[in-house]
Image 1 (cartoon, rainbow, N blue to C red):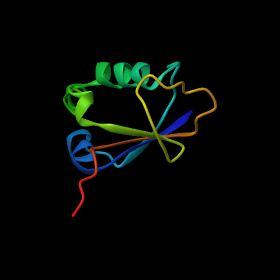
Image 2 (cartoon, rainbow, N blue to C red):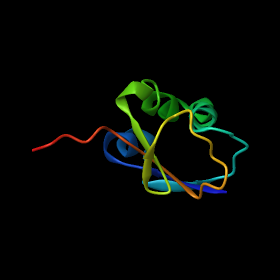
Image 3 (tube, rainbow, N blue to C red):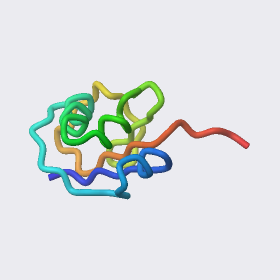
Length: 82
C-alpha cells in the first residue's frame, strides 16, 4: 500500500488531496499508467507527465524510478520562483 498525494491542479483534476493505493507497479510510470486507466479524471491529470514532478518519500525523483520500499508518492506541477 502506497500513500499517493496530489497537489495544485493535479488535486483539482482528480478531486482528492490523497489516497492509499494498492498497486503492483514497479516504477512511478507504471503507477501513473495504473491510475490513468482508472477513470477519465486520472487520465486528464496525468495526460502530460512532462508538466508534472514527482517526489518519492519527500525526495524529488523521476518517472522511471523504482517504487521498491517507497511509502509515499507525491505528484505536483513544477515550482516557480517569485
